[in-house]
Image 1 (cartoon, rainbow, N blue to C red):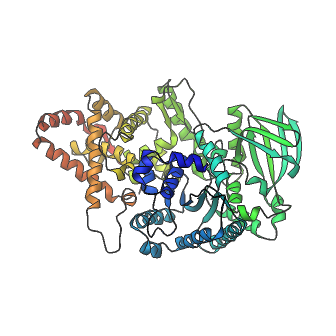
Image 2: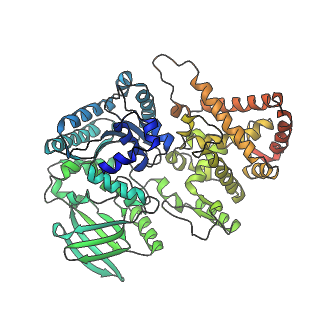
Image 3: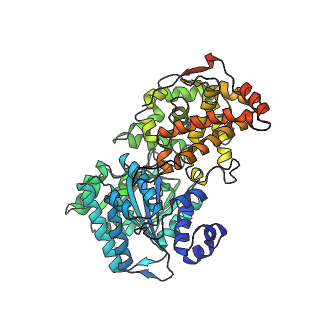
Length: 584
């Protein structure tokens, strides 16, 4: 991997944007393993003078995780304890963000303000030590000690954190999995000599029931990047109460009772065979046990030392996709699954799916995590429940600053967003608007958006959707209500002004951001675009920018004609507006 990465970071992007191989290595990891885009990667990297051993910070809003990265790009075969000790001791400073922000560099200070907001929303912290070599024994001992300290800190303080080593072997495995991220198919050979197992056939289905050592669990690929849990109704929920109990058992003198304390892990695969001492698994996916495996991995160094400590695994050979989905849902229903994970079965969602697919026979409404539309369906008429929730809160509640948080949408605001019967035409209109908006958020950047905005692709496009709705509201001077998505799209489309409206909305967000960045900040405060975009303050700035644009347009050469065409394209009747859906 070292030689491969060394060659790949010679690409123009890495050479132009990062001054040394250490930074380029971390950027490569963000691009190739976390699948961050060019602008997001530049924004995530914090390496440099006064980086406090924090090379990058990536906030994953989809899974509520803060990733703190430190890279060691070296060609030697091993890394000793000293550099590891420096990293670990520095990371402890994350417990006191105020103090760390005082001594960190400018990029780190800005990122830490985003971290603070994320931690207020109960995000967990995952430290990742990335190296192109292997740790020495003394370094492994230090890592084990630090994992134990983190466990104790998490129990006694409000700081949910774990640490994972990504060495050369794990780096190669994650890289291979990332290559097939869109459609992962995990193969794994389980050494049965280390296990106690029973192989049977039940209802014409191959099954293997096995007691597997915890130390073997951490070798299963796809745990940290989530590919192992593609069919699960949920991904890792961080270090919640259940997971703390698992970790406490691992570190206690009761670890040999782990098998009896734990309900077991359910895994399905498309093909399963026993050959000699190996259980050969193809298309492996864990449908119940995501939380447990992530917690076990977070204690990897301690787990490696445990003897006679097992967890129950149930392996089923299930090649039928529909049957696999049913197993995933039913095996999770017995435990405390949060409401947002099982909203796909809510009667209002099922009714919306039925209405949508009746209205658009060539379309498909995705309700389950990991579900894909049939190949024969028109991609332009495929809509995801999660995306629709984000569109609704941006357009109808006029709160795009909440759209990034799937947890809030499907927990706190679900009743407000989905209590009414929603017209399929409006759902598809929002889908159309967003498809057209995302076309200007690609790498070519046709609107010339600020680079900082492009780095916020996880948040800002929902503000773009909001700004589109406000173009109609402000133009018609009806700002206390919200325009119909379907009527507004039809009006813009029939007048061939969709692209112009999207351009105005995008430029307005750009102007609002630049105006906010130029405002004087309170003493010791750093302006954070990522925090600004998550506040209601930014909405006032966007509205002001839209008004300014409309007022200035007639004064520009040729702008009078464009202004008249815009008025006609944006004109709606009063009946085409409804009151905002409350969301705060």
